[in-house]
Image (cartoon, rainbow, N blue to C red; front, side, top):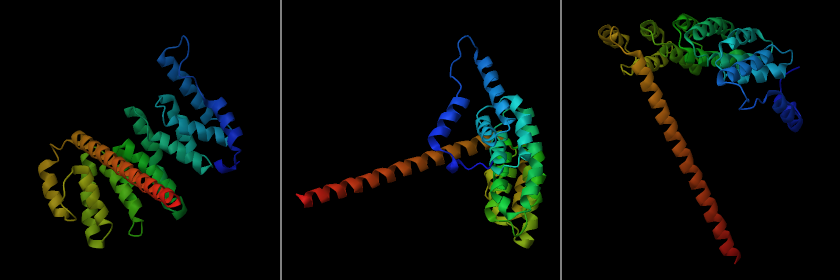
Length: 271
C-alpha cells in the first residue's frame, strides 16, 4: 500500500493514529528512564510493523527518540521499498546522539550517496541523506560526500555535499576541501561552492585561490579549534533565524495594518 496522506480519510486516520501512538506524558509508578524504555520499545515495534503507515509514523517518532535500541531497525528501513519511509528513517538516523550511534548511522548512510547519485529522480532523497550526514559529522563520510560531485551535478547538491564535509570537525575535511578547490580551479568544477564550504568550515575568506588557503592552513591546522568554530556557526544560525522571524513578524503586521486601513476606508465610504 502506497503512502499518500491525502488519500486517507482525515478524521478516521487522526483518531486511529492518535489512539495507536499517543503515549501518556506521565506513567504512575514509573521512572523517567522506564518511560523512555517504554517509548523506545513502542517505536521499535512500529519500525518492524508490516503496515507502511505504522512504519512511517514510527520512523517520524524516532527522530525525537535517541534511544540506542532504535539504531538497527532504522538502518534496516534504509532498504524499505517505500521512499517516504526511507526518508523518515534517514532523518531519524541524523538525530542520533551517542558517539557510537553516530558512527554506525553514518556508516549505514554513506553507501546511499553513490546509489542515489545515479538517478536524477533520486535527488530529493539524496539531499536528505546529505543533510543527515551533515548533522552526524563523521570523518568516514568525507570521501563518500566528495566522490560523486561531477561538473554536471546540480549546484545546490554540490554545495550541500561540500558543506557536509565542512561540518566534520577533522583536519582531513579542510585538507580535502582545499585539494578539491585546487582541482576545480582548472575545470571550474564547483569551485565557488568549495570556497563557500571552506569559509563555512574555518570562518576565513580567501575566495577561490587554493594557494592562499594552503598557506593559511599550514599555519593554523595544528591549533585550529573545530569546536569553537562549530559553536560560532550555531550562534550565527540562531541569529539568522531570529532575524528572519522578526522580519516575518514585521511583514505580517504590515499586511494587517494595510488590511485594517483598507477596511476602515471602505467603511467610511459606505457611511
